[in-house]
Length: 143
Image (cartoon, rainbow, N blue to C red; front, side, top):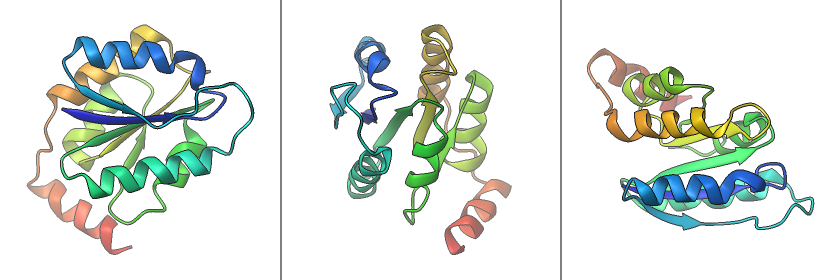
C-alpha cells in the first residue's frame, strides 16, 4: 500500500513516528513535508498531497495538522478526494468501508501515537464495501 504524507507546522512533530509505523507495516511512504515547526499554510500541503493522490491511482494520503480539521477541509475541495477526519480506529474503519475515503486526516493535538497506529491498522485492512455506499459516494462526487 502506498501513502503520501504531509503536515503543517502543527503536525510535524509526530510525522516521523507515523512514517515509521507505515514502514513497519510494509507500506511505501512518500513524505511531502513540511519538515520544520516554522509556520506554514496547511492549505499548501493539503493541495500538494491531494494532487499526488489523484494522479497516483490506488494510493492514499495522510494529512496531519493541529486538529486535522483544516487539512480535511482543504483536501476535500479537490474533486475525487474524500478526506476523512478520524479520531479513532472505528472512524478510520468506517471512512474506508462506507465512504471510500482516500485521505486519512487527524490532529497531532487530538490523538496519541497508539490511537494513530490503530487507525492506520484499520485503514490498511478495511476495503470499501461498495453496494449501497457506492451510490452515496457517487452523489458526493456530483456535488
